[in-house]
Length: 345
Image 1 (cartoon, one colour):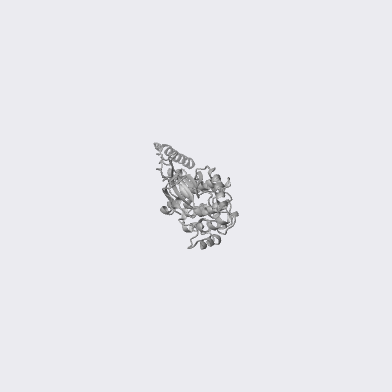
Image 2 (image 1 turned 60 degrees about the vertical axis):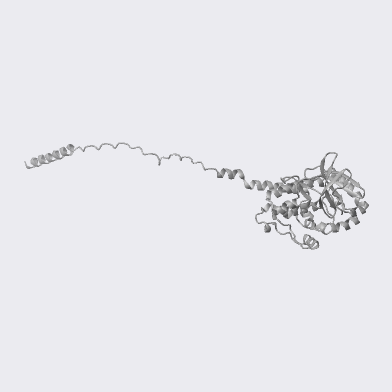
């Protein structure tokens, strides 16, 4: 498609091409009336050949425009200039999750869970309103600013639009490179529901905490075969430091059969919050702070054994009385002498 930088679509002045894909190109545009920058998503011309596709795209654009969630990009306008169909969205200044991961490889567990929780909450909001994304991947997740604290899901609902025969034929070529994040039922061409988004978000979380996607292949076809048939590699084989709670969460989110997964995005969001709570409780920072403080030493209570002994004066020894025994002895001698004389007379 010809680079439209410098041209106008309606009242929007295209100033810079931000990116392109198999479906559309995205431009940074200026809206003079309110003097702000917006993002303009311009559909490739060959997709406009199907009247059914254009009608469905317009209906979906209107539906997405009714979504108001802090983690979903907002659609401001939808229009047509000549044969060019375009959608106007909020301009997001931060980079994509794909770029963020490229710089960091593996994210801290808490950060990865926080991002996933935001995206799961956004999906729950959209699913309740009948919208399925079906193309969740790091390039479709952006951050509102350089702090990377708030994630925003972009390109919402675009893959869902390809239901007509002509659009499906075109999308087969357009989807090359994205099977890595597709659910097994999606790569096999089966009917997809909300649980396909749950699987794709599980792949994104897997990549954030291990540094790799679950399956690696040289061609899209071999990737699709692995997605459909091979068991999920254990996340802890790639990152042994990964808490068991996250591995269990990923094993359920990435189950091959949809009935074995989390059944709703709200359920997945709740499970992520539970893991965050469990991990935060396991760290016990307050307890660690207390244990690292100096130990207060208290004097031991005095015991009887350790108290000084009370010294008492010893009693004075009594002087022996010798006169009584001597008197008795003399008396006895005199008595014996008297009896002897008496008997002799």
